[in-house]
Amino acid sequence: MPKKTTQKEIQSNQGIMSTILQNIPKESNVTKIDYEGPKIALYTNSPKYLLENNEIISNLVNIIKKRIVIRTDESIRKIEEDAKQIIINKIPKDANLQGMFFDNAIGEVSVEVKRPWLLQKNTQFNIAEITEKTGWRLRIRKAATKTSTTAQTINYNLKISSSDRSKQLKQIGEKIFRPRLSQKSEVYC
Image (cartoon, rainbow, N blue to C red; front, side, top):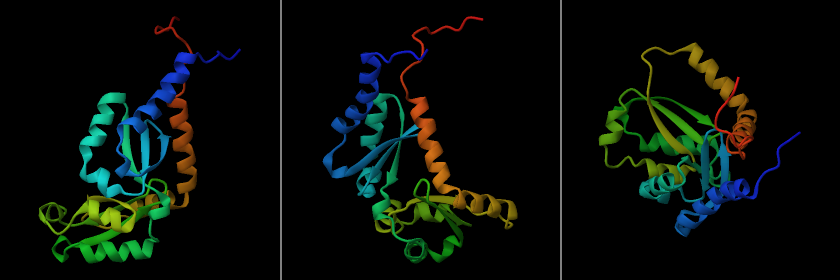
């Protein structure tokens, strides 16, 4: 027999969402809040604001005691070819760009470069600005010394299963953040 959800549990789940909405400024343009696995994802139309003002997210994490990630809303994501050209034009030649992988499930693009430390030192390379222009969240990775067919196969499988992964992340997140099934904190054998 399924346990009835108490009013307190309903309020605690709704409390997370309402706390986020109350404590986040309107300039952040949050369009959607979703449970994604063990994290709460904030989808926004202006990611640059949240990326440059990361103390906002830090304060939210301290209030609700949950992990929060910033995602770009699908409506602002440019098609991959356009985003690729913007990123290629912004990355300095010295960094030696090796490849890019667009992950549709989470709206991130992994950029593999031989010298990632050059991107951190370069004042003209701004991750928040590129994220704003492309609509894709940038993740800088150091490129492998040898090309790996295993990594290419993994990226291919991630690409073709992106819609399934999105659904699974949401389902797992809903199970993680659901109301408690039992009020007892101890397990008896």
